[in-house]
Image (tube, rainbow, N blue to C red; front, side, top):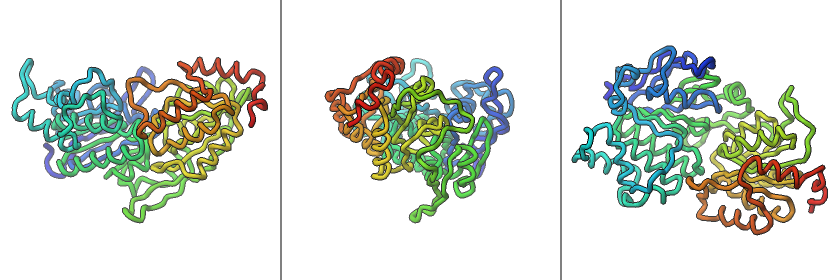
Length: 439
């Protein structure tokens, strides 16, 4: 382990290129024992590339990555695995092994070929499972778990690896608000209690401010800000990096800063952006990246697109901002509020068709389903299929029931984005439904 006060991880002027494109340029950061460092920035800013470089999965073109005093590229694979544990953003479930067996995978760096686990391995696995409150349920199958439960078990596997450095790539992806807060609180507590260093890539700047000791902000592969939340968070940063106007406020209970966007929900197209003449108005229900392919595809087809309700800093909200579409947006960490719900209803009133992406649903965005259900039979509604290998309904079945009700009331499930485009062309041909579908 690192000596007290020394850095577990030191990244010094790291540069990574993919062909002719520079993904990271002169990026530096440190992570010390007991510290949670949040790595944040817009999509494509270089967060995942930096984590992969720290793991030694990418060869840098310049700079150094040092863990526990050793240059990572010089380490053998097994030695890297004893120093750095990595949890990717998502991974396939695979076989339905027990939770206990799954967490045991974290002990592989310590086992000789064909050797069985010993007492130290069993103890490490038990400690890890108790830390995430899953020891009593260790016999359950991994495929039976919800998204939030699976994230906790994935954290246990990482803990069982017993490394001084933890790397987590978007551990809150696909989780509802409650599970996001739970996951990050556990990581922060583990880092402090066990004197480990945690570097966590996060999409949400307010989440980073709430849980991190220090924040590193990347933009276009460069480090544009680094320091404590109080030092980093500012309306200027949000405007420069995310292109969003916001007010800086402080939580009266914790004193921590947070940003409240004040940009109007409806925005004109970005300056200079060429937009084709709209064929018809299509509203998209998305979130968590589920609209990444759908939204720009509809815009390219010439449809006038609106989106929401989505939480600000969500990747689909960022996409909507870049495309300049009308959006109903909600403050992070909160359920859809009555004013935002009314704005969503106004967008649905103005649209000619509704398309629902395969969006993960929790208490924070459940209102999207109930509001869309109000328009079943009054607007053409297309629903893309939900993923079969990932949980999506974190509402105890409420979202799934609303979805089934929409389908029974005339909604149509379509297999892919191209099918949606063809369906819209037929249903909205020459604007025929623009007036006919109005209530």
